[in-house]
Amino acid sequence: MTLVHLAASAGYTTPPLYRILTKSGHFLGLCGAIGATTTYVATIRPALRAPENEPGDIEVLRRRTSLYLAWAGVVLLVAGYFQLAGRVAKADKHIAFGDAMAPGRIRDFLRAPAGKDAWVAQGTLYLVQNVVLVVASAVLIALFVPRVRRHLNALALTALPLSLAVTLIAGTPATAPKDADHVLDPILDQMHIISGTVWIGGLALLSVLAGARSRLSGNAGVLWADLWRRFSLVAMVCVGAVLTSGLWMSWKHVGGLGQLWTTGYGFALLIKILLVLAMVVAGGVNQFWLMPRIAQARRADSSTSLLHLTLRHFPKVVWVEVALGVAVLAVMPFLTGSARSQAGSPQAVSSGSIFAAGAALVLTLAASFWITVRVSDGLARRQVPATS
Image 1 (tube, rainbow, N blue to C red):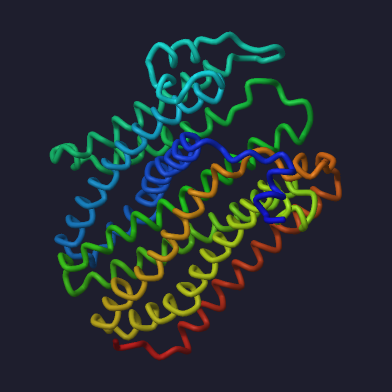
Image 2 (image 1 turned 90 degrees about the vertical axis):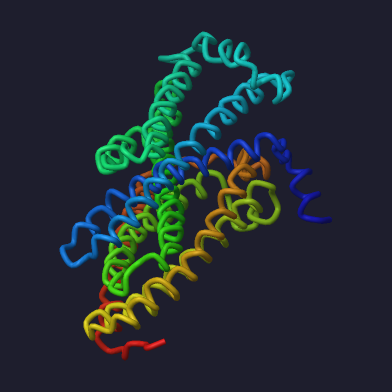
């Protein structure tokens, strides 16, 4: 019996095509909005302020960042509309996706009354979410106007909390939580989404910016060394958040290792886990091999080597991470239901021992990241810089 037959016998139903495309598109839009704005605010903006940067290099990166953010606003707006139509089609099985895109259908969906025990109607939450989404998209799309780009800092700082609100509002439960698990589940779910979109979206933005290397000066290697260094810290935090929240959700939905290949949900999760681990390995290559070489070349004041490492070697590995991240987004819609329910296992119930294990995990991850930084610094002091 094949894995597909095993999944089908366990009650797994492959999501319809519209659901796959709209959900993946929604996460792609969040990567563009949340990931790009966070990366600009936390990584690019402070790096551009360094006094040794060439004015021409700063202008090239600001312009390219502005256009990227503007297109991210377009993607967020379009993906948001199709995502909303997908919610309408999902709520009423008798409505085709094409019909669900009609304004009247969407209006009725958003006006639906609150269910029993709900503190607010689910449609109201989606209405607020999409109003915020339109405003966030408009702020980003405004960057297409050349005169508006002078206010890039202000617009990015405005779009960042709005973009975060798009997913946080949608993740707000419409009913009051019944226990600690109902409080932790949406919190960790949002942590997973936000950290993942910052990680993937930030990598994509920096990869696109690195494509402007032919327009940069010979001294741009110093700027890019700072960019990669700053983002590596951001990515490390995101990896920790993704792993912590991912392990919680895996425990909630998977009752044993065997369910990873005997249920549809588990098999999709297994593919996602392998893709994320591959991203972590690629990040490790940057952290333990390229970052030490970049630091060594910077201390040796080797402009040619530094430029080659930061704008030739480093982006190649990052593009691999971006491709893996896009694959993760493609797998996300297939994580429907729960491996526990498909396999007939009891639901997971948290306890003091589970929380203690979670705390130990967080401390272990923090210690491993501290060791990673120390090892990378040690390698930077010992390695001989590459000249090609």
